[in-house]
Image (cartoon, rainbow, N blue to C red):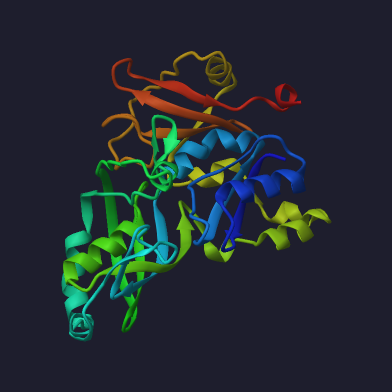
Length: 313
């Protein structure tokens, strides 16, 4: 079973809980996820099985979309509803907050920027997640991270709650966005609810719950829910290899074509300014893996090579 199940994660489960459940249901050893979701968050969590785990890093690095409910008037230690209250806004400050104020503040959060993650996060310091250090009462210093927010769209404003659609790049903390927006507007805020609506090319409409997956696995219906590994990379260029080039790729040898790739915007997972990755296929349509363009060698370099069916068995 090689491929990707797009799971609609329920509230209260960690991403590792979902992986463990899918591992038991499918009886597969190689199972992973692409893009951690907090236990309180719901929505799209791609679960990769077998050879599809080879593309996990690229799917994790792809763009994400969320629907967030930001509640103004209160700040918490974790920047969401799970934390202890650290500040409550004056009633006058909350009453004065309008949709016009919010919409005027949002553009400042667009584009690339430095974002300070929550102290209670899964970021590791000396092998320990920051939330574990914080809960142990140890001093935690959080370093800002470079993130990218592509779009912010107001869905509804019903004071004190703002429902906001967010499109962003890897590593963006929506909890930090909620906290920072509250500070900018002077009313304080925290994240009250979060649903991931897209991870890379996979959307919530394509996702199934763990209960639905269990039912599908009881019949052959699971095959209709399993996406091929290369579905995560369809926005990349594709190259089709001859039998000789396929053999060179499997031996880790460079692949030289008549022309270098045309310049194009870098896809997710690109390595270097002139090294967009590409999907490699055999002449009969088998997905062989991932190659990277090397300007230095003027050749495609094998990067991830999937085994043949015989090797996999």
